[in-house]
Length: 611
Image (cartoon, rainbow, N blue to C red; front, side, top):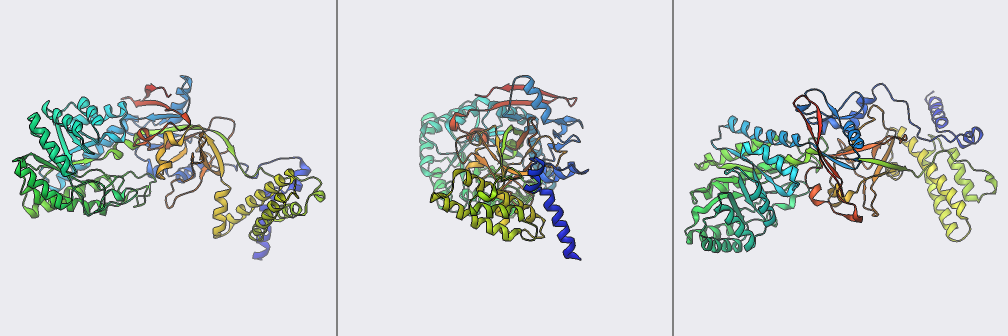
């Protein structure tokens, strides 16, 4: 009975694929993957499919019309559709690709960060304060930095710099006297001079040293300029981070003093009677630390070092724990490279509690805590939106062959495989068509097949493959070889953007970003594909996508219907703007600042034209 039911089921499935003979008789050319009718729960299905409520729940959601909307506090319960913003921009003559910036999200992120530390300080009875620091290298755009400083002034938010050029910007923009400027990076005489001059004019400039050469040069310049510097020392911890930047920490890392070098610094400062100029201890275990345990280990090691040094250095008063607070790009809340297994509150709790515990055991005063969380602050505020230009596929639907008997034997056999494949034999026929394809190529290379025959053979090959994968998906467990086949059959969606300009980390370090359509989410997508940009470069593509449990090699997308189809790449506010390049002379895209007023209405505040 089961066998007969299976046969009937597969017969129905085969008819749904439309045999070539039927197509030839009816003269129809219906696509093999014609769009299915949308089920009642299509909206919920697509929301789950793209996981937007896992990774974007605080700021982005989907409305009943199937559109991605802004859903943060200022919208006052009236979410604003991103598609509506794109429509208004088109009316103003601004076309995609565009980067939409929501400066209020920067404010919310700072507020969340500071609020988490304030809550931890209160809960654990910590007796010092917390000061946030923004590393300007994360995003140096004027509009971004200005918004961060405008909102952050109430918290004495500081700036971290890594070069003389960045220090120049920080000195010009910081307004609050108590806002720290943290000078990291390799320092030459010009860089150190500027830092000392900043101290002279009343800025709180900490020079964080990493080599004895820098210390000697700083002491020499401070004597010449008659300035007592605010000195910080960077530690090279044994504790390591986790994720892509794990090598930023540990014994073999590029930056920081070993314990031996640290003691040599103290000896040199004592000899110059400048030990009271040591105010800050700093460490950094890498960006996007995925595992909270690594952060706790590092903080405990650094806190112990601070406590020991505090007994020798009376003015040592700051502990800068660096960056590492990650973004949950895929919404999985795991220690995978694209996620983190902790919340902002847990991060703050562990830092404050660990420092307090060590300081109490060493009977020393707790330090003022600084963190450099640029990715956390900046990443969520920007969304890249672009349109899909075209869709390409290896299989073009039902294949009709006239005068089959006159075709070479290999073509006839491939056609028999194409018309005869079923749910029972698909695996065998797939293996057979692989063999026939190799034979076809050999015959062509030897001159026995025409160009037309080769083209028909390739079309038949991909037709068999497409039918085989449809049957494989019906199996309880898809064979591994068909998982590879599904990737080969993924459609190519040509998109109006440059990977190298707009999301360079997707190419350079395989960074995963949330990517999804910003509309038509009330329709279940009916095909899978990867994204190809407009550059003349084989690396100009995105073929890895977030998933709750794994990394997908294709993205579920909708069939193009003659209207503009827009995709959004979310969380692009950190590093992408500053790392993007002009490959193939594709310039900057349009930059648009979008704000929501007190009544929940959305306004385009500023348009910076691309070039």
